[in-house]
Length: 197
Image 1: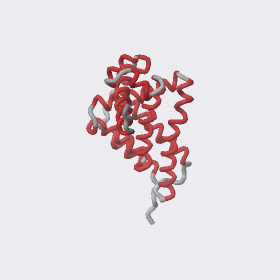
Image 2 (image 1 turned 90 degrees about the horizontal axis):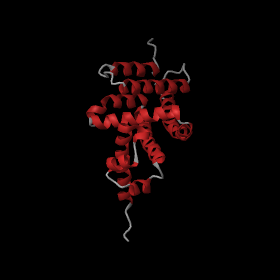
Image 3 (image 1 turned 120 degrees about the horizontal axis):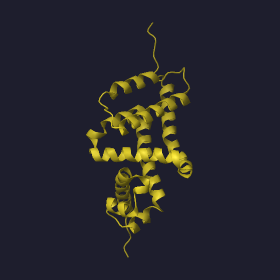
Image 4 (image 1 turned 120 degrees about the vertical axis):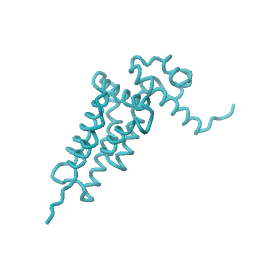
């Protein structure tokens, strides 16, 4: 029997994650039945669960995938850029895919409130985004670009709270056309202001 290449396995895993993202966004965690996951991914349950132990593991992998992508952006450009990318999403991707990401993000929030086991498993994964944000802020402070009168932990919490507020705003379907100046203000709030002599 021929061996399957790692590239093929990676592509199959990506196919499952992309299909599952759409399925969880449309139907929620409970409504994403195995049959619906099969339809969304175009694969059999055997193929899906060859890559992921169970539905919970699949959902966590999907949420972790999103968190890792965000952490990469944070490390390079900061958390405010993640927020700007959220506003740009409809231009960058199809409306449907942007809605899928948002739906998955909201499902994560719901499960964090209602499922203690999920909350415990998610805590270690979400720390990656917090750590990336904190490290970026520390580098910015060391470069003299970040205000030094507020602790980095407080600034990290502030930026994460703004992100959650933006996600909620978008989830409610409220207009986002006027959000860029708000994000400019958020960015300005954490910057160091040099006094002119």
